[in-house]
Image 1 (cartoon, one colour):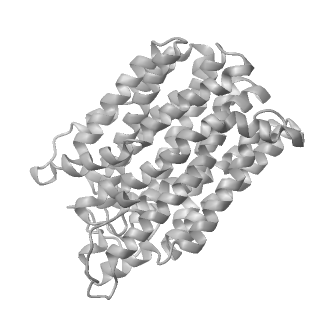
Image 2 (image 1 turned 90 degrees about the horizontal axis):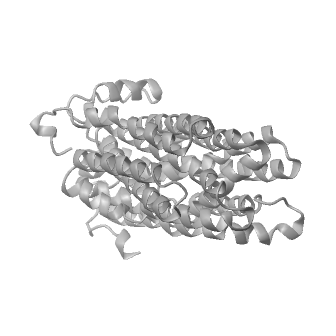
Image 3 (image 1 turned 45 degrees about the vertical axis):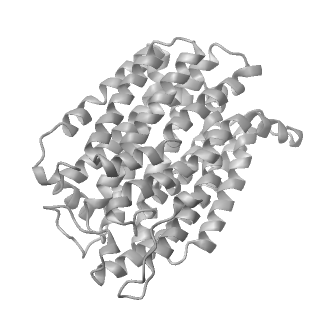
Length: 439
């Protein structure tokens, strides 16, 4: 965990040793990202297959989209709790809701009841809310020159659990078969345990709360508050909610680009990734589809998370905007490779790895740009707005992906996903004032 350290420092004038608190916060967040990443990925890796088995290919896309919608909608109450009580209770709530959803998915498989599956997947998305909000908790107390790297380290920590989890889906399924549970429901049993463990670790260990500490430091005028607004962004310190967040974002071109980068990158990634297991399932039988899907998704998730520290370093070194542009280029390359791969597993792997790398660029650079562009008092609300927008964009992609594949095929899905990056590319290439060029 040496990589998760921050430079030593003396306590601030408020008596708070910020560097020590930040080191502890990063390590704790990294640990829960490992555990939570196992729970999310082992369920998501078979969620589409389970939905397809219960209700058909079109339903599989809608079920995946339900998880994304759930994560987006839960961001609103989670952010409200964070605004009032800090990061810790909001993150714990996200994982508890996710555990409830995973349990309902298992029940839906037992009862062969598609509506209950949708409810379960909706609540399952709460786990992704917690995981995504954790990246923002990592920069509450970060030094300005290290925000990209420290945010990316928490994103990277997800790799350990997320990359290995899909390959254990088959083992998880077999391990619960003796209890009479249906095929493909076993991974969700493991998700329940992982989410409960992550919630327990956060409830006990995330003290002092980084957001509440950052607000105290901001009030005292500390340089560690990381809450200076971008030029032109109003410091609305009287209202915390989506309306103040919208006003702040509307006044800040940098914040608008940050939200757009996160949302579009997620839309492209979810749209293509959600249908890849189903696409593979048309060429492989039940005996080996889980193993093939596990390999492909593991390498895709490695692309998403494994190089996040490099992306974070580049974000701090060359700037937020250039890394966003690089992410867009990788997304376009991914759609070109995957869309022309047919059932060639090797080419699909290459396409999905590029897809993950493109997502990482837009996510890390966009999230960093957004966080530093708004005042500390409204930052959770703006971050929640970003996650809501991202979730709804991903949900829309997941909802239509099954329909597109069923109607026109997997190559057309990739072509439309590539076209979705055009508005973001135009926004990222828009001329900016010299003072903000590095962003």
